[in-house]
Length: 521
Image 1 (tube, rainbow, N blue to C red):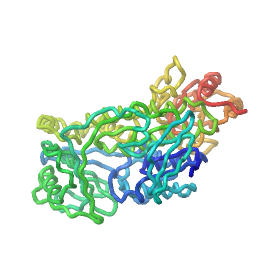
Image 2 (cartoon, helix red, strand yellow):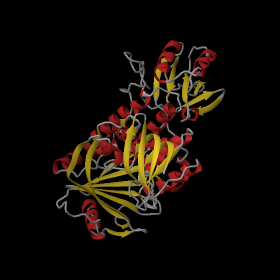
Image 3 (tube, rainbow, N blue to C red):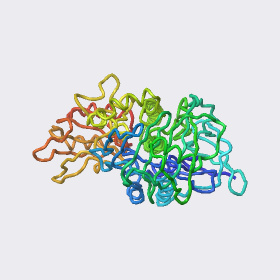
């Protein structure tokens, strides 16, 4: 028995669900399977950063997650029992200024609800047992809940099934990297009887020699206690006991009277890590996303977030090529962009002294300079920008600018940057830039002071099969817009700038579009 579809997505975790939503928003016939009987019943990842919240807005999910989550406003840092200070986690130029605390099981449930609204349900208890690539298509053997094996013929297959990805191993794609030695994370969801004041928007960091404890508020009350520490006995596999976690918290917080009471349902976890990256994220019609493509220790909480951003990157590209709007090489840019992103996250997290188990030298240095660094607005801005993922860019991508030219003029934003969500005026109304964008379209913005033939630019945009909106924006009266004057920005469906050019340079715009998009018949 066999069936066919446009895209087969293997794995219904957050990445697989997000990708499936993106494809369904483009009207792509998508089948989603997972070997598990239902969505995970475990808390797991619990923070969604600002850029991923913008991704979820594009997928029609952000508001429903906000309704169930907690906005995190501030982090307070302690080392060796001494308060060093804190930093605000809020960002400007976005509709989502604070990161969101929400458990992964709730995230998966809400993503599943959104996918159902688009007419697709996950096929649970359905395991992929073999994947074959044949020219420009794929054949996948699926074993269903009845034990029978069926063949699915698809134009594309995407492995989102995790570190033991069948898609990756079937295609002999190397998973380059190594195990992270002498590092473990132990976690528990619990309420605490201890010295720190509870606030639903404040996260605490406690640093002691070889131990970092993070206490982050979670919906429903209490904290996620997350401890990075050394790994003296890697043979221990079972989750940490309440006593083990209580002792770690008491030690790191210098609070011997600290007591933890697990919340209901009870959840705790012990994990060890590998840093790995697939050699490529594309082999013909087969692609990798999420943990199938990259793994690292969850320092900074960017595993789930990077997976969501990768699904957002891949979805519009795959849909555009599948629908005949774009050249096939557009999908290749997903692999190059996402691999660079993963490498950058790995580099940043290896340098994250705030969460890695500190040495005595690190603790001594933090005691000396920590208060002044945390009091510095410049340092705080850098930390916020890094955590939010707003500084992550695609400037080195082939999709940013034209060959042999700069990715932007003076100042920012540059080609490859996320478009900031600045206030502008359109047709006499105050709007935000992100309200003008659509995940299903490109957007060509004529910026304040741009001297261009609007009708001519619109005629050019209409010659392509992919939908392209043309919008002229103005600065608010008496204030600078924060955008380069007299220019245009061609913004990709995922909100990153593809091209920055002089407003009257239609030839440059056409050259860029002709490189990636197909003209309408």
